[in-house]
Image (cartoon, rainbow, N blue to C red; front, side):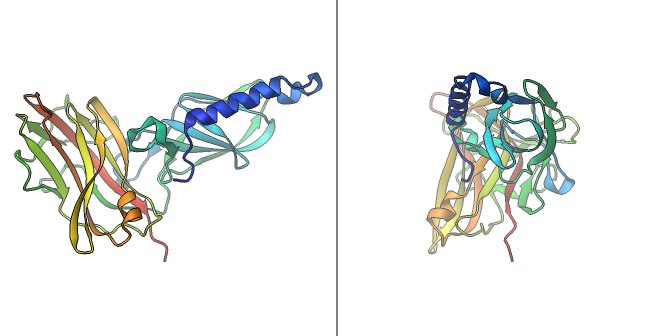
Length: 300
């Protein structure tokens, strides 16, 4: 994915550059004193049609006049070897598939662009860091489990039923949003299985275009996310990501692009989430909410 660089490498190179700079001749010292910007957190604003404003923006990728300064984990104090009026661009970053080694710019969030008067050896604190989805982002499917009917169903493999909870101590909650229910699955034995799949199938954009699933989840058992699709008339079930237990509500950005990339003729994609009680466990409890299928609108 464009913009994907291990953050430790970016930080390593930044440290080397600063170290070299410090060792330069005395006459250059003043010009090598950095200005700083401080970013403590990022936020997300959404419309009703875009669903929850829940996000997991973990990093910022900072550019000055479209030159990459570096990728920084939040909260971040960013050194910039420049002064005066500068065009600073902040691009929100995520951990793709929830993995720290795959930090990347999330292409669906808009960058924040500011013109700042940088002052050497001074810090500018940026507080209005609220991003939004880009205008050409498409949401072909969302499920929040608020209605009596759902766009997902249990498969024939499932040994447990579909449930939901309105218990405030268990359901997903984001301050400022109304969320009455979350999906809830109780697996009572080590032979229990649940597999939830979209009723509708979807056509993913052509190979080379990215597709993501956003999802809130909480689980004390391994959870698998993947797709069913047709390839030359054959039904394929393909797990794409295994999520480890999380005792608090978490947010994940699942990259669904791979099947379309290596199987360009694949069609009729259906998204599934499933689990089987791990060996030795007497029960498992899993919660889901705010599933969003997302990609850019196809150009005409």
